[in-house]
Length: 419
Ligand code: HEM
Image (cartoon, rainbow, N blue to C red):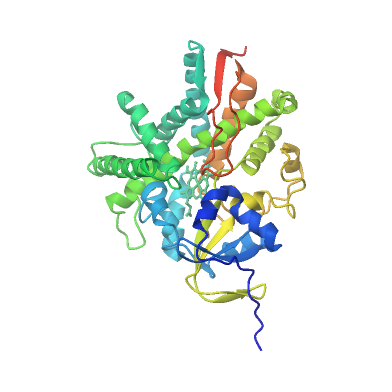
């Protein structure tokens, strides 16, 4: 007698189109429909399992059960991720590479980052005071590009700033896009990998000397478990794994501006300068607004979970957006309420905007602390250090386009520094 049950299954040949049509809600809609945190479907032409919620996240981040090698769809590898980066490693190789990333996330490193971020905001406000109107999303991308390069030890060439910012943006805006926008992302990745690769060669030849403990220095001289330097292409992919996502924080900063605008009662609480409240606000922005819809892994070897069979090699998606909006975890999940984080117990499997589990043992985002610190600095400017008007515009955002960005990209007018 079998002690396994058939997983709830979405019938049909393939549901990739539904995934594209429903975006962030695809997995959550079916979790509600099947009344189950796990279901089977067919995506990208093959069998796939989708799951969400705390227990699902726990099993998904069990490295005995899931692996990452070959899990990411090719269109994400060619744009967002690059080849042979930390995201595709498993076991000892992953841990060793992840230690390289986490070594630059020290308290001292983060302090340098917040100082750089503040300085860049200061210069931006000076500039904006001279202009009638700005598109916040685009301006913040540039703030973040300059911040990322300075922090990572990558020299900035003034005449290249706009072009390179656009290239890094294309990498994270294009993985789910169709047609020219997608191809722009691939082109941008090839171009930036080449130029960062050349920079790494210059570091190794002693012609460029980035400060110690920066990403460029650390990654250029990092040795793998066999004692060899990373090949140039892989080292470039990893330096870009610092630059690109720091620029992507512009998306969360745009949503932060939206939250400050939509919830004026919160602004008063932020004005008190209470650091703890600022942290709670930023956490709620990361929970509430859509960014990463899901993460992908492959079943490492056959196992049974909750009486359902997981077969080796099956593509499995963990519902990031849906776990952050799971009513079993969050009271009134669709209400924006920073106060919920006052009592939050801090489980690594319930609040997963940047992945869950452990940083070193698993694939949880290496840049989560970076993101939080940069968002706190940016929130302070948006809520306390600037006055500005938000003219009529379309501030709505899609639950289908990935990544989602407010449609107007947040236009602001009459920026003045608050004294
Ligand atoms: C902009 C906001 C960000 C979001 C929404 C985000 C989200 C994520 C997610 C969902 C993952 C995958 C987790 C998994 O596979 O289980 C991830 C991994 C990663 N992120 Fe982020 N991230 C952000 C910012 C950053 C920043 C600022 C950095 C670097 C400074 C960074 C570096 C990385 C790296 C290196 C990985 C791969 C970790 C691994 O595979 O072990 N991310 N991120």
